[in-house]
Image (cartoon, rainbow, N blue to C red; front, top):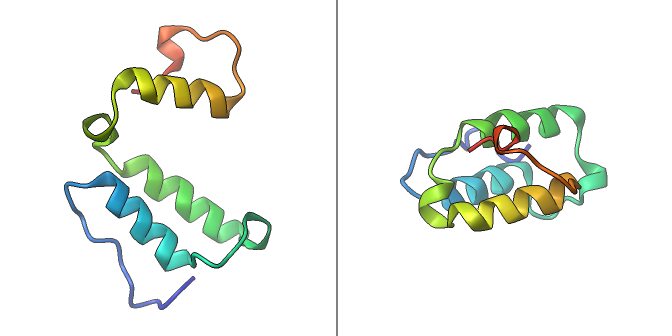
Length: 81
């Protein structure tokens, strides 16, 4: 990780929080360079960041969810927001 003194500030802007998370890990790292610990940290932290629905429409979030999960058919209960 980047400087261990870095921490994520709780803001009302989820995209800023995500950017800070990536900054703490290191913007210059490619995905193949990430350690297991860094991937797990990203998963846990991203899971707790709230407010994306305030930045994007639910329709857009659903489109992105389907596209990047590789799903063809999806039921409403499969969508986590």
